Picture (cartoon, rainbow, N blue to C red):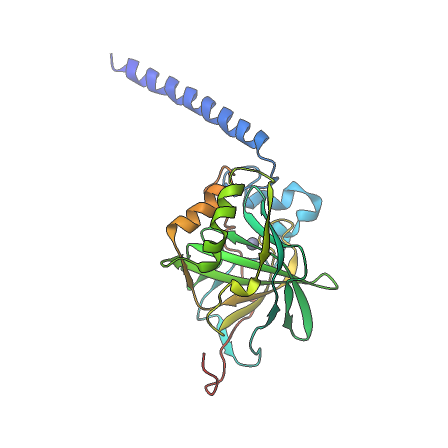
Length: 274
Ligand SMILES: [Zn+2]
């Protein structure tokens, strides 16, 4: 008598397993992105380096991102100087990349200058939850502003957000975000967007040398990470997440090994107010 429920359970287990594999397979055929964020998927973060020959840095790289910026590793410095941004408003396009939402400037959106090199602003996009952590703490959202120099070097400015008051830049994009929801590879012209509307609110920032956090995980990316954690509403994070429809509810790459890389924290001298 006791055997019947067990056989029934075992049988149900295999039916559920079969249905699950079927649904996963059909989702993947629909999903055009070649990589995913699901830990157990053959296209998940641990396998990114095997998907394409030129994605090898994702598994073999020694200066990968994201990392944890813990205070015992961070060296406080003043020599880096303030982040020199000279952004300007220009036409932009909002694109659903399948695993994230990207705002790409079509015209000249200005630049940042690091060690005498100008890096032009190309696009920004969001990860949730945050990819980097500060003293082991993960926040709700992370914005990446991606810049490139004339000779192809990449510099990313990162900003983190925790749940709280709305972020005014995201508020200004609400209608556009809703409009590109569920259009994979969909684009929408959103008119003139001023990158100066992306608030930073502090002069302190971390600097380290890392990589792109998505394939091909290209290294020697100059990271500038704003120290101040800003705020965003739960609804704004949700809107960014539902707009893309990959099978995972996250688009944050796991933390990568630091490999003794220095992390600096720029803090203005005492005579300069923060
Ligand atoms: Zn990113």
